[in-house]
Image 1 (spheres, rainbow, N blue to C red):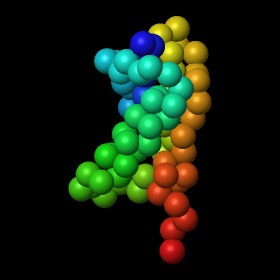
Image 2 (tube, one colour):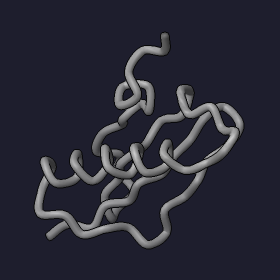
Image 3 (tube, helix red, strand yellow):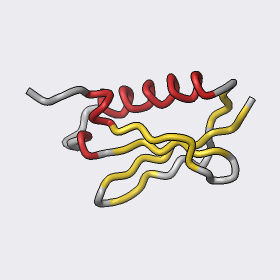
Image 4 (cartoon, rainbow, N blue to C red):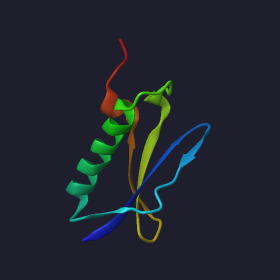
Amino acid sequence: MTQVYFHCSNTRGVLMDRRGSSVAGLTEACEAATRMVRSLVATVSLEDWRDWVLHVSDEAGEEIFVLPFAFVLGKSH
């Protein structure tokens, strides 16, 4: 198991994940990142999530991958 952290950012700021999550590998980290983006977007708010990015980092703070929210949301119509 590996501890990963999911930090969200846009041009106005950063939401830091201080707890992190244990994942078995990269595939599980990608699935957890996608679930997190979908969960945030599903919350009732006035936030336009299209310019947000999810940064997935390891215990040492090294970035593993990024997931733009727009990638999960798809194109706006």
